[in-house]
Image (tube, rainbow, N blue to C red):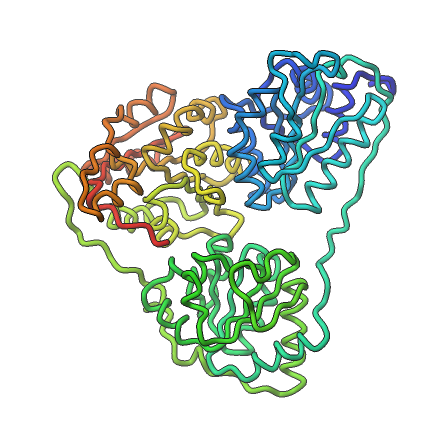
Length: 540
């Protein structure tokens, strides 16, 4: 490629120079030549989606599982407008993502598809970088990648269509990001926090998504204090091998773990914003000392005011606390000596009963936990079914778990699962989705998974209803029929789209599906037929 190139080539090359090998997208007038250059001239891989919003979700999941910056591309106007929900989801998930978005020609302000794309992006919480001129292409791409990493959110690079065939002199421009840990805690607040920890008789360590990198340091501190360990949903699986891991903290805890948390006198919180589901709307934090450590100042004090707040790196702070506990020869609490971890992590079993033509959801989840591949990536869509999956299905580590509930939306799961599968080609990806969510978004992209030949296992919790709304009508003794639907057979849809599908209405049919699963050659769907009156309420 000569130094003198067209703008579309410069964008593609600059994207490659930032380490991008996979680009998720849907082509249109303003980005098709850039995509072609990325594939043919830069050796990149392009993963085409069926819907623009899917590209954002795929790239976001790729970023979460791989640890790299995700890259998606769409064209202008309605294409970018189709991405609003997905952009909010990725923004609230703090996902580093660059979206190469075409824009209508600057020279034609009355273009049919013209909208104010900056204002559209702004309402989602994502960032915006304008491609200023053909002469600033590489600087503008570098700015987008830099901001995605340091701000940990999607950054939309706005690319006017009439720039694409203008000439641009290419030169590598990369803003290197300082990626060392954040600050070290010090001063009176640290001293007060250590004093609270030293005096605690029943301390507990809670880790969120912002503390995943500090796993070993947190376990050393827990062992020194003889304190149990727990995680938020985002850090699910972080302490899998620790003998005093009580799993998820909050409304998703087992009854025994919930009681244990309530009895603790000091919660040391690393990398979590302590939202309402984690704290059970503050109930679990009453009458105890709360110490909160986070590199993000906005995570502190949003819904709960801690007794000590440290804007500092989780791992370095854990090491600092451990050092001073040893220096002062503070004795261990002895809290874990009283604990039976098996009891603390045992969820209430299923009833073993189901109406004719349906399976018991909880019993089925317990069977799937043991039968599905253990080295899995687990993805969940939104819906009434999801909280039982979070509680009863294990994951190898937090990077192998993706939940699409940062915006409380449904219909985002299958697209997310595709991105996860591209990022982890050697792991089977298991998606749990509801019937409503699959009809809203999954049905659009199942064939994309087939075309890509992904090892994707889709479990549909089909209660033929919008379950979260159904239960509200039932709870108020009202007629829930407006929430009920007669859907087509999802198993047959999966087969018609090129995959393999099995409908499960009994335990025998479940076993047959699991036998067939062992011989799968591509995307595989199991449709669980559930009684809407027999699906557990959401644990939120």
